[in-house]
Image (cartoon, rainbow, N blue to C red; front, side, top):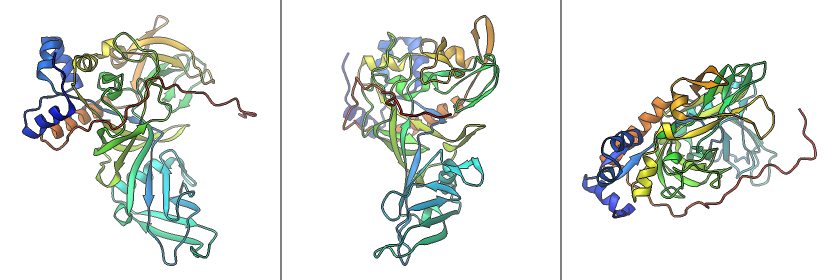
Length: 389
């Protein structure tokens, strides 16, 4: 069957003749008419995910005070930001915690307060130099007062993150939520058949420069994400059986909406940032369509035991996303409740929003300027000289 180029699909978008399906709609269409007829019809498949992505944050530039200061110790609403950049640049991480409020208020809250137009208190200190004589500054500012404010997230959109349970006799408070004792529950994060990197598991259409939705705004894939593992073992349908690829993403904070990017607080663990990401998958050939048509019933992940405090956690059971999303799974003859830390409803909204933008001609596809390595591995930390608990 004839292959399609990005340019050919973009011309259809411009002319208003493009056919777009969400990943869920495509699966239903393929079940109804088969792969070949679906390929003849569909040009783009839209995806979505919305959930906690701890490796997130924002670069900010405040402009110079008079007299100017070289900021070396910086806080925003009492949350520490990085002071090792140029004089009035900073990076605030989503998981940074307030000095006063602890993990109940952190960098994620600061970022979202800025997006919502709220005032944020900046306090900064420096040693004072001949070119930057001021030693401290305190002011209130809003997003409109900043020169630059853009989200830059080093690791988002994890490809098939493992589900979690706890076989110990006490509750565990983790970034996967509270895990009840004696396998009392299972939590999971990936949005299954809607998840972007499960719809193009070989990353054949996704790379540096791919145009995406992030936080409700148009953004881009900036690089491969940290801990990006493209060498992860895969099933026959191409989906990885364990956590695989990740993306580094960037987007303009001023254009975002806290409906699709908001703080997450996990009891006993800390602050994170719920990030919504939508990625269009151009149907350039039958292999891409076949990957996009893989359903929850055919995508598996591992439930791992978080009570084992090592970097390699034992697999309790392998399950499908159809099982996880049903609300219960069976483990050792016991029915165990499941719940997502991500939002399938929001993921679905994001895929629908992206579909609408493409159909209205407001979102063109961007062919990557660089593709990711196909054999990337993730190394563990070099054995430390000392580890304390």
